[in-house]
Length: 132
Image (cartoon, rainbow, N blue to C red; front, top):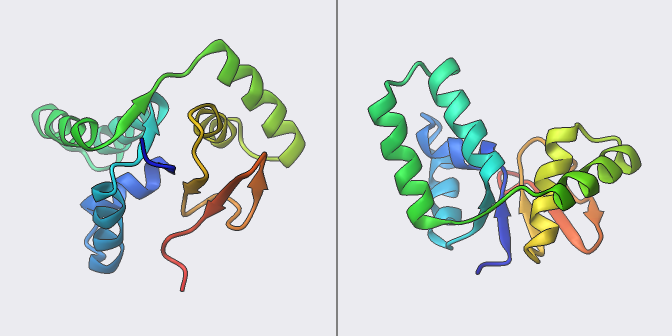
């Protein structure tokens, strides 16, 4: 298992017309990172609601992501920890739950475009792979 955990926004950039971001996302996915079921849910929701993709195409994307990434579950324990993280670091609950799942699987880096880059939570560092 990779020590890298991806937020849903990074996975979604594979579909982007921004070639620099799409290439970065593909490079990260090639490292066989870890994601949570929540990331799969968010990718599914954006593909369906925002991008208006047909279900067969969404299933293809999800199949490819699941073949590339280790997928970890959400649990009562990650939920409880997410509540604490959200309160302590003033993050949205959904961002905190991604952090909690990343911590639970032992990741050292969470790649996210929209969380607080540079923040370290219990040894897990959040980095924006598109900066610099």
